[in-house]
Image 1 (cartoon, one colour):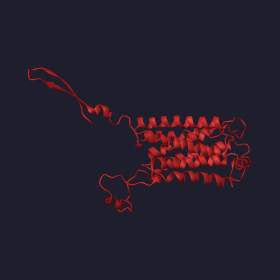
Image 2 (cartoon, one colour):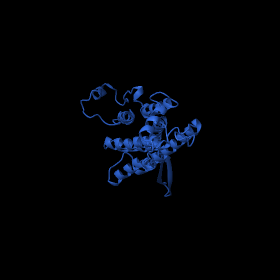
Image 3 (cartoon, one colour):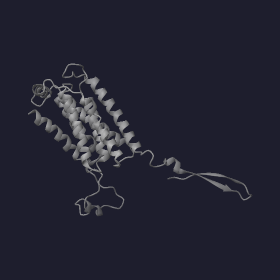
Image 4 (cartoon, one colour):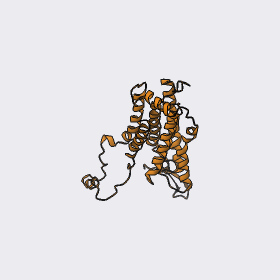
Length: 270
């Protein structure tokens, strides 16, 4: 039962994320069923998208499902709740302890760095990738810290009242989402590997008796959500285009009929 639930959790996360692998990619074949209807649209008219295809919906659907699942497991005494999972873990791994999860939570970033060293081009340049990571980490830290000290859930080992959600799991899934977004156009397996590592971090947090099942599920949701919101808010690509304000002003030399010279300043809408 225990191993089935752990495998189910990993499969659920991978399947939910794989649903967004094809976002932003061109049709695979000119005869695609949706592609043939493009001729019916007027020139310049944007394609009609259903509400569930909106960027905000796609970015928040999976994280909210995970966070909602974590909330549902809080104080749940059923066979699918926190206490049932903890009891099974204690029965199978009563003396388990490791600190690998303290380092494994950052492993997806090492994956991203390794691909850069081997010359694999990411979706964004290094500067913009670092900016997205910085915004993601800030959003995740604020959200996780606020919820931790608002809910004050007791940890399974009774060490502190800051269990919900899991910060380690949030960090791991945030980094995995960055890898997925930056390298999915090269291969979907980069993201699969990163999310597998992140799921391993969540499993180790429960095996170490440091977090409940609800903490891990919600932590994964907060990590993914923080990364997606950072990408959605990152509209201006630094270092790629000059400022529109600079393109609107023109300075040119002028010559007067009497032989004088000067400069003219002209404003032109872009």
